[in-house]
Image (cartoon, rainbow, N blue to C red; front, side, top):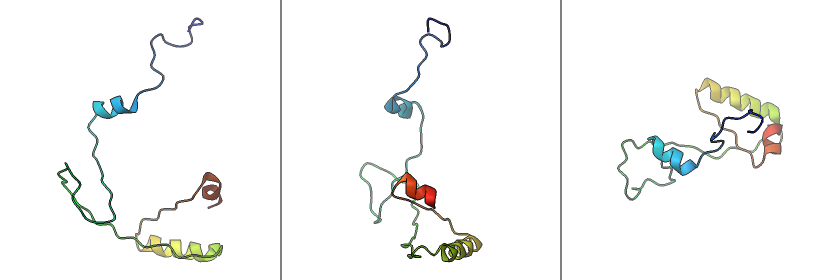
Length: 90
């Protein structure tokens, strides 16, 4: 600040709660079971079906062929990993 490289009274970080109250954001409630969430009035209820992924046991060529099949079927594909190292490996 004394060298004139930053602006005085510049806010470098923000409180998440105050940012959330400044704007109106849509709220999504996710539940495994269809039920009413207290104090809410949902405008849209969407059912999303999913199933557990089969285990390919390290056979990446089989995984690739399944991904290609899902792409042709216009499915959304989401990969999750337990940590950053595993995600980079995918």
